[in-house]
Length: 126
Image (cartoon, rainbow, N blue to C red):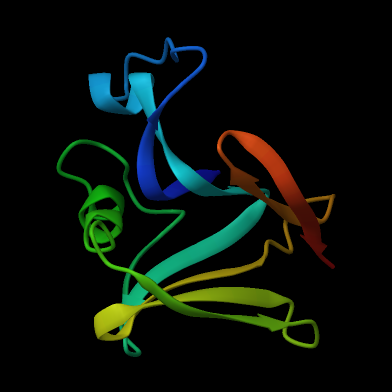
């Protein structure tokens, strides 16, 4: 599971209680968001993978190190491929976030898009 936020920083209507998040993450969110559930995902630069959903999310873990590479970078385009069961967010400087179906999950992978905290789209990777 992962959530990425984009755009202007807005105050949450309801603050999160998760103490693993920073105070800023608990109190604010991005204008736009992508929430990924029951899927595999990977962050990379050009081709080499930097981290994926299986990596450690501890403070010094590979997952946080890789996701932090995306902070401050703009999304330049998106790619959707039904035959490869994936979608990719391409960031400036060759960075990407690729989402694929997790074959181990009994249900379809899915993701949702939000704007100003409201869900605006939802899809599954079959």
